[in-house]
Length: 577
Image (cartoon, rainbow, N blue to C red; front, side, top):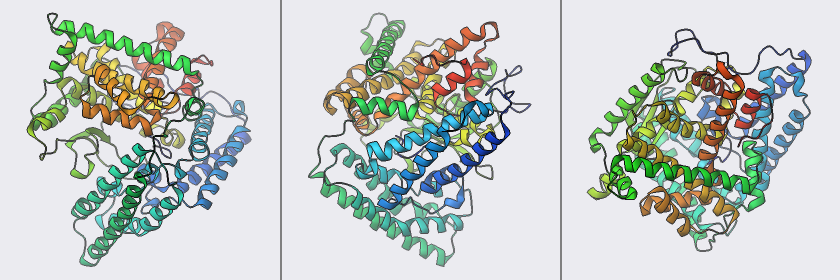
C-alpha cells in the first residue's frame, strides 16, 4: 500500500551477462533548449527536497540521513501547506514545454507529474490523513535504525531517541485528525500494527542497539518508554473507536478509476479493466488444470494442487533451499542472456529477525543514496515456535512457492530492479516509483522465468508459479468488487479459497487487505502491461529484438509509470492494455 510515496541505466564494463547490451533508455541525442532544461532541472531539484521535507521517513529509507529522527508534521496547517506545495509544483511542471527538454528530463517531468497527482489524490480526494489510521502507523517506524548499520550504534540511538521524543505529539495529532467513525478493517489493521510496534519497541530495539555507553543507553531506555506510551495511547484510541466502526471502505467507481489514472497514469474504463482481469484469471485456471494433469492425470486437478502445495522443505532447510535457488536463478539469467546484471552485489538470504516477521518473505534492500556499501537481505520468516506443529508446517512454503518467491524478490525481481535503479544517473528515476511498475515487474518475472525454462519444465514448479499468479488474479477481482461494488469480506475470502487455493486463515487475511489497499490489483495489472509492451516492442524492432534488450530498456527507466515507459519505447500513445 502506498501511503505517501514509496520508495538510461549505465551498464559498466565487466557486468555479468554475455554479449553487448543493446542501447537502452531515453534517446540522448535530443538537443534541448538550454534555458528550458536549466529551468526544469532547477524546479525539479527544489520540488525533490520539498517532497522529502514533507515526509522525512522516505528520506531515511532512501539513505538521506539528515532526516534521521524526524517525523512528518501532520497538523492541519502542515497538511494544507503540503497540498499548496504540490499544487504549485503541478502548475510549474504542467507549463514546461516537453519538446524543449532532453529525453531524460522529458521522462523525469512525466514522473514528477504523476507523483504530484498521486499525493494530491491521497491528500485531497481520499483525505486519508483525516480518515485512515493506517496512514499514521505506516508513517512511524524505528526499523530503519536497527535494520542497517549505516552509522555507529550511538548515532542511530540518538535518532531513535529523537523520533521517540516526537511520537507523543505525532500520535496525539493523529487522534485529533481522525473521525469518530472509521471502517472496522482499517482500525483492526492499525491495531495489529500498533500492537506489533509496541512489542518491537519493548523487546527488540534495545537488544539490537548494543555497545552504547551508560548515559546514552539510559537516554535510549527513556526514549523507548516514550514510544511505548505514545503507541499505547494510540492503541487505546483505536480500541475505543472500534465500538463505532462501520464497513464504509469502498472508493466507489469514479474514484477507483481515478486512482489508476492519477497514481499509475492508466486511463481505462471499468468494463475493460474487469474484462482484462477476468481473462487472465481464466487463463491461469486453465493452465493449473493442464499442469495438474501432467503431475497426475488420474486425480482431480484440485486434489493435485493441494498435494503439491504440501511438498515442502524441512523447516530447518528453508534458508538453505532459498540460498541455492538464489544462486541458480542468477546464473540462469547469465546463461540464457535474459537481462544485464549491473553489479556483483548479492542479497543474503536470512531468517527474518523477530521484529520483522510481519511478512512471510521480503527483500530489505539498502537505501539507494547510502554513502557506504551496505548489505541487502532476502528475509524469510520462520513459523512461530509457539504454534501447534501442524500450523507451523502449514506456514512453510512449498518448493514451487518458494522458488516463485525467490524469483519475485531477487532474480530477476525486486533486487535486480534495485541494482538497475542504483546505476541510474537520474535521482528522480531512482526515487519515484509506481505500484504497477515495482510489483508488476516482480510478478511479471515469475511467469517470464517459467517460460524461459528456469524450472526445467517441472509441472510441480509450474503449479507454484501459477498459485502465485492466481493469488494476484483474485486480488485484482477483489479490488474491483470491494471498491466498485458491494462485496463483503466473507464473499471475497471465499474466492481466495476456491480460486487461489488458500486456506481459510490466509483467505481472510488476503480479503481484509483489499479493504485498505485497493491498489493490490496492480501486481497483475502491471504484469499484463509489461507483457503487452514486450509483444508490441518486439513487433516494432523486428529482427533486432532480444529478451535481454527488452528487459534492459524497460529497467533503464527506473520504476516510472508503465504507460510513460511505453510511450518512450514505442513512440506512440497506444493503449497499455
